[in-house]
Image (spheres, each protein chain N blue to C red):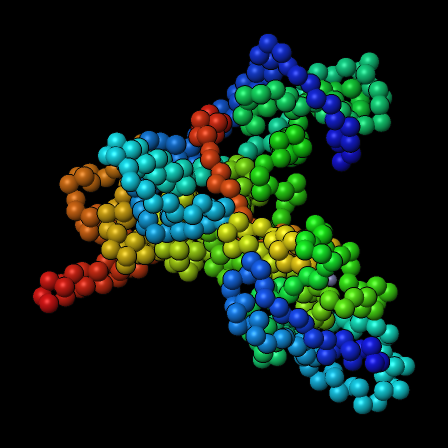
Amino acid sequence: MSLLKGLFSHKLNAQKLIGNVISSSVIASKSIRVRPYCAEADLEEGEENTEATQPKGRPEHDVETSIKYLNSEAYKTTYRDAKVWEPYRRNHKGAFAPSKTRKTCVRKGVMATGNPCPICRDEYLVLHPKNVKLLDQFISPFTGEVLSYTKTGVCQKQHKNLLVAVEQAWDLGYIKMPLPTRLYDYSLYKDSSK
Amino acid sequence: MLLSHLTRNLRFNSGATWCRKFSRTVLALNDTKNVSKYAMFFDKRVQHILTDITGRDEEKIYRPRYRDTAKPTYRLVTDKELEKLKSDAEEKIQKTLQIPPVLDEKPDVNVILSKDEALAEHDQFNYVFTDISYNIPHEKRTVTVREKDGTLRLATNDEHKRMIQVYFPGEGRKHYMPNMFTEKHLERLLEEGEYEYILDRACVQFDPDETDYIRVTRRVYEYIADRSDFMKLYSTRHFGAAAFFLTVQKNIDSFIAVLINSNLLHSAKSLIDVYYMVHNQEQGLPKEWSNLSDEEAIMMFAKQEAKDGSRIELALQVYKENVEREMSS
Ligand SMILES: [Zn+2]
């Protein structure tokens, strides 16, 4: 349980961001604290009970909760106007980051790192085709394609989940897909329609 | 269907004369059908009117889209270079506003080329042969199927499309029908008013004579007609297509009313021209049509042809009152 508590009050280091001009100066001055979103934190009162009933490790939430969270006051105070990955900074040995992000942040249902990626660190961010507000933050406004993990810092496992969720959202029409302009050769259809 | 588990490609050398012969027989079969009203789409006057009424709201045409990643550049150019840039921009507009053809459904192909009983039970699968040589438009590519019982036939429309997708996967086109075109999700997108995106994606995903394309576009146009929401398509390539489709369906009353409300009287009259061209192919336009003013022509149409003439008359009356008010003030 102490592990869980540590998860909730995990402090995110929002140091000076390289390459993120937007709002970096605002965020850099203060550190961001990810808070539990709803009343579930109250469950900690009866510790012995919860430990017996709740599965060990990281709690999982459904999309509806996640969508509600993204529209809530708690979300706003946590991230302010930044995208969820903007205040995140990878920690690594040496001056240059490895070309790939880590394989996964959660191993055997337990947080396995001190600096989990932007999606793993907040359990209320659920990657799902209906969660348009979250997916939109990972799509380039210029090309309409999914941003690279080198930019967002998302771990490989969550990046894969992200690609799947975006593909599903394109398929269902929740997110607009980048499309080419199709040119028609009228002469092909002229003959067959007469 | 267990087709195309095994596919083989076959290059036809020397112009593939025998394939052409067979595709001609397919065409001949179609000739016996009546001349479709949709064929009027390719009529030069109709084309001219449809592109004319599309409108050129340059802010809408040039709005940033995905993939236009180029930042604006500023530079000094000579008059000659400026002319060149202007003509390039014009060409680009014409490409983005090219109207997707409005067609009848493609009849299914059922042509048996040969029956070779000696080849019966040659394998457990059907074989599909695709002509993948260069410089053939995909619509004219020959795809044949050798059945297990030894018959050689032309591929059906569905098989044809799937083989084209295998060898020439188009950008943005999926090998399955995206779920957004199923009824449930299509209705949701219509309620959100994403007409242009639905139509754009349908253009990329389907061929214009495919059953699904016709189903999707028809639903969108009819939905728009019910809600008189045409101006959302103004200055897009789909405006002319919607106008033509609804004209053939004799469902243009709300379209004309919308055009009058937007002070596009001349476009309304042009659309009525198309209506007469499509439906009165023998008689042509009514007498003294060219001498009538826009208002008179629309009035005449409302009285004689329109299903819901009162609606057009009302729109016209509102328009007249607005003009009078502007004159007096
Ligand atoms: Zn992670």
